[in-house]
Amino acid sequence: MYIIGLQEVNSKLSSFLIDLAFNDPWTILFTSSLAPLGYVKITSIRMQGVLLLIFVKCLHLPYIRDLETNYTRTGLFGYWGNKGGVVVRLSIYGHLICFLNCHLPAHIENTNQRLDSFERILDMQQFTDRKARAIFDHDLIFWFGDLNFRIADHGLHFIRESITKKRYHLLWDKDQLNNAKKTRPILDGFLEGQLLFKPTYKFNLDSAQYDTSGKKRKPAWTDRILWKVKECPPAGETEAQSSQSKKPINVVLNIYDSQMEYGISDHKPVLGTFCLEFEKLVTQALVELEPEGVWVPGRDAVISYCMLDEYPSSTWDWIGLFKVGFRSHSDYVTYIWVKDDELMVSDDICQVYLSGEDIPKAGGEFVLCYYSSNMESIVGVSSTFHIMPECAESSLGVDDGMDVSCDSLAQGDSDTC
Image (cartoon, rainbow, N blue to C red; front, side, top):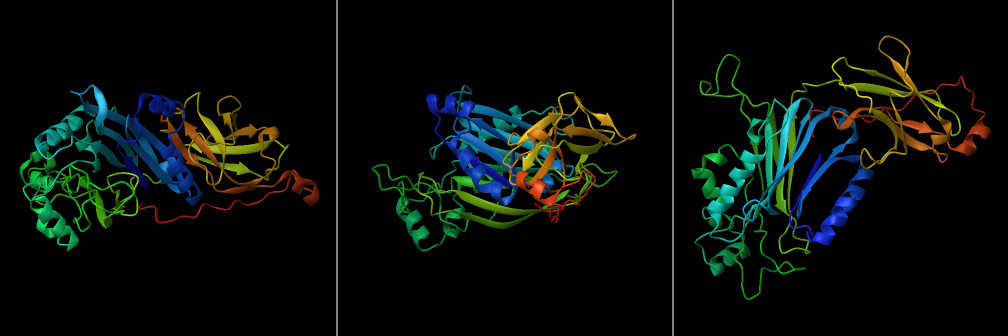
């Protein structure tokens, strides 16, 4: 998975309205970069300048469920979205995960205001799923963004000298977020990697040099990535009774670093890579579907599918034909409404026909995806299959009775992402 959080995206009214009608340039950039690698954008949410994007490998799509997005404004007493938080929550293989991207108040003296804003965001974010109404109800929380915590007490010269000599540890005990974790209950359980990289604020634009303007802002680790795993007490015990609670997900931090090569902002981006280890509680897609026979342009094609009993089907469900490397659920070549032409083949298998006129003449590698209107997500993905180009049909003499096998999607270790 790729989870991308941005702050201070151009939020001028004209730009914001254009981006509502069309994808903003950042979304286009990340989507175009990740789609060729097999990553699909499953959702995004934007609140003025705060943007959160979620990309998932195609093979995981049927196991991503319970998608919800939300946001909380905290700027101008909650009326303006230049500050606040945006959230995406989802379940992956049955485990509930929440991603929270925040832009908190600035300036060194506003530590309490930052913490109050964070607490307000936690209180205001409510979800419809009974299993996890609030952020802290999730099995795993990632909290990240421009949190704006500063290095207190130390002077500018001492901070810069410590950075130059890479003695970052001399600054940790004055980091406002580190200190708040020791005193504020709202931060209990949040973990973070060691700050072994240069503070990411504030730089001259297009430069690796700290602020040389008249203000000469003190460097600080304003941009952070933290996580919290929910502890589940053993069966028959309450959380208070359990001295060693079991965690449903094990989180391993592999990389926590800044990206100093980027210069378009006065902040440097921060990257965290994690390995998630968990038992798969969901092992079967809600809908399984496959193409039947050989697919060639101009000839009607058959799609077979079956559903689990608990799947909440809808009149507005559809099956899309997607070229391998597609960007999102809306990046289909063509689609058909499932209920319009559905035929029952057996008690549990249905079929629909796709018009030959809609099959792409150029051919290539494709997958079929079943989109759930009720769940607003892809709930089934076929194996990869080949459509022959139009010119190949006559040269090969394709026969209606000919059958071919479909190449399966490369199966990785689905227990990690």
